Amino acid sequence: MTYEDLLKELIDTDERFMVLTAENRAAIRNLPDLIGDRFIDTGITEQTMIGVAAGLALRGRIPIAHALASFLTMRAFEFIRTDVGISGLPVKLVGGFSGFLSEANGSTHQAIEDVSIMRGIPNVNVFCPADEEDMIIGLRKVLESDSPFYIRYNNFKPAIEHLREFEIGKAEIISEGKDVTILVYGILLKQALEAKEILDKKGLSAGLVNLRTVKPIDEEAIKNAARNTKLIVTLEDHFLTGGLFSIVAEMFLKNKMSCDVLPIALNDKWFKPALLNDVLEYEGFTGKKIAERILDF
Image 1 (cartoon, helix red, strand yellow):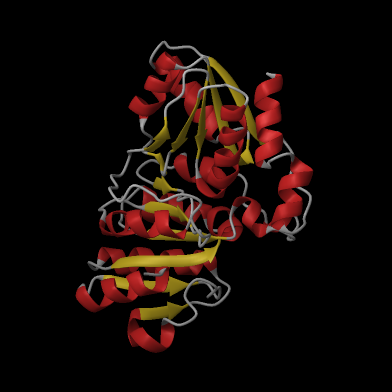
Image 2: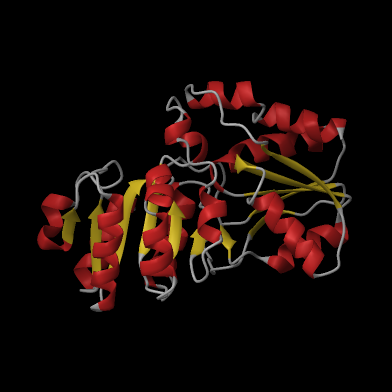
């Protein structure tokens, strides 16, 4: 099943669902002709789209709103905060080309602060699937949730066979390790898996956790990793500030816990625009370079 297939199924079986876009149809090219007036394109007007989505939600609908992640989370931020967050409306926000997925686009189009921005709004949750299979596994529960959600859209092919069970706020534990545990969300799961395999060959016991939702986050999974491993690595295609490293730091302080933590993120800089594999190589996010940084630590 694809993303479009799932949306079509939800629309056919539940009259509450509607699909919106602010001109960007990359994830839903085939849907408009299939769902008629359950589809609305507001044009390049992200703020208007959020206002429309909030109005629909107030009338019992569940709007699924699509736009480029950078413009959705930043240009429309006030509207998301005020119209969706404060009211706690079940609007679902789907950000395309987030993180490194914006590839050759420059800094204006790079959404590498989106998780920080969206998790900072009370009531708004955040779902960052590792690939299309992971997204489809969790999407029905996310879309049917009563809460607002920001979703980092991801149509990558899976690097692993995922657990079919999905619970909002529950991580996917891929492996447990005594020496190091890599915490990751989104597309970098593949590189984290490659790094884990390198570490295993070096004789280290390496754990790997796919967080799936970063808000709510699986605190118990992170606590277990902190208790049972020597080093936690936070890996993300996001700014260091406000993302997973910040989330883990906040959680440790709240629970009076400590553990060595190695953050691998973009430290106060945008990434050099290029095709994805070249971005990963240049910025140091390949499996090999991640493993090297962990071994150096």
